[in-house]
Length: 275
Length: 265
Image: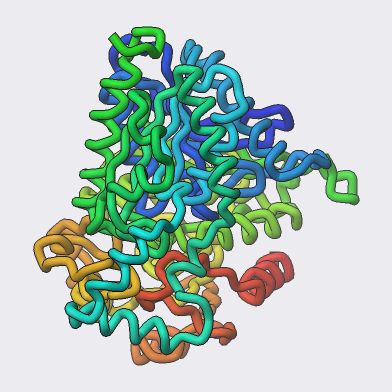
């Protein structure tokens, strides 16, 4: 495949990933795409393949990878916590793109647990210039509850959905399937503020599939206050999409959105800074 | 790293192969030239993603038993080159033949057994004569292409109204031209509707984890001279809208396949 290189890499030679290179002379920003849940590096419905190839067309070097024990990657046998292993795997990925693509600054991207891991590493690792967090951390607000419950009685489809969910004695299936543990809002806010103050660029995308905890674009400001207004913050809400972007048109919209954001926030060849 | 018998177990390596280097594979080598090599043909579309972990587990088990193993992505799928909308059954058959050649070259084994699930099994059957497979292991092979097309169309028709997935219903235009997350060309639809699946002449093990679809065609295949059927429990929910993001994990299938292939190697 022209422009892509299949790799086994890492401190234990345990990681598998596909590096993608632009046909134009590459800039210094590399984009690393992390696993969404347990899905291997191609992403849900091949989302990560489509995204990384689109970014290659825009001039960005990319790496879609499997973290330790996911997809085709193995374990290292190390005894650290999962967080430590995720950070170490991402450091390995950055080292790989430094060596292979000449990248000096990195954007970490992920959906769901991938967003969680991208946030984890972006908040602690050197040389991370940006993060793309899809259905990442957000918190229910009074506005959320008002928007959630008031229209239900007026919309037959929502009534059916509400009743259907109540029939299930187990937790709501979509929520249980995609549930991640969220840290306290104050801790996340503090870290986001530090990241932004350090010059990082952040793209938050929420889908309609996150409707169990996020249901309007303004909710981001309700959650995070001044962070929403920071010049380094960009937020989108794709209200009609599901959590894994099963429809091709929704994936295209998401990918176009990411492409538009990154070319403005972290232009190729600019050292990662806005003009 | 060794397996206790002091035989070296290499980690599997990612490779590119085939026409234009567009196909992608994970190859696990062994130095035991007495053992047949195994080719793992994946299913198509979402089924490929859902079975990825099972395929890896199967490859590891067979490799630990001394067999060189290649699992791969057809063009326009997985990590291979090409757009999903350009997927073609004929190209998948070609890529399977390329994979067999690659496996023979890397392993130095001329004896090749193939494992395939769903349309991966179908592809293996269609490539079998030219590939010269020694044995086939087929998990829920798709034998009736028209029935398959109808079932995928029905699932896609139900998808926009899935209130567990979408906050509000999607339109028919939103979901047109796709099957469960993947764009589908008219060419692929035609190929599947018109496909003829030859009965393999080599020894065939059918792993049956479903009861209802393809029943008559499967029974006919099972009745052929070289075929054996093993019923795998529990039944696999290939076509359930509320399980699309669930991995398919069947330890019993991995065990049965490994036992069969290593026991008769």
